[in-house]
Image 1 (cartoon, rainbow, N blue to C red):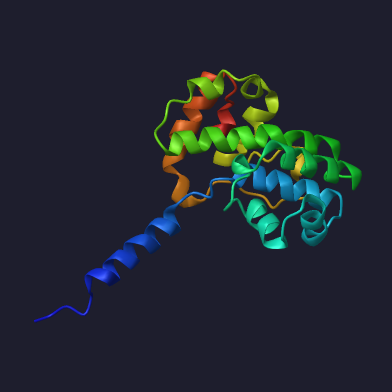
Image 2 (cartoon, one colour):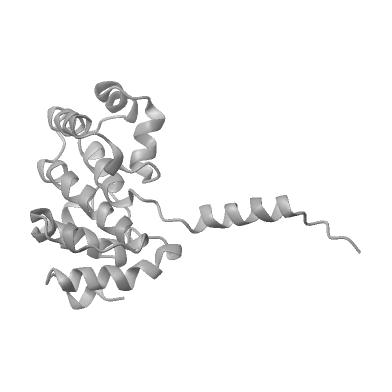
Length: 182
């Protein structure tokens, strides 16, 4: 008796499962970018032209599938300048750098790396850092985001193994609230 499931099918099936389980590596910064853009009533097409990329790139940044952690700093600055010039809410634009740092920490956790150097950075001591990480694991959406984002935590159910590690990070920076523990 032969199986209709070939080794190639299994490899493709495994790869599909990994893709479905894999975290969106830029979910925090992508969410912040989208909220800032919406606050400015700016289209993805306009933002793309202003920063010199095609619209699908902006969409992938906002979806978190192409993390802003890999975007050169001059282009991040151009994003921030464009958002400010378009009238985006100041605090949302200011949160972008911290959100990128959150994504770096989450990716380090997911990769099993030591986060102590990342947590030593001044960005990790900002209230915004703890707020955004708490939003990842619980529905603790900061009030300034409520008009621009749907309710719910930022991490998907498939990312829940990261939750305990993120709680540990929040404890390490002394910024955990009882509500942030799922």
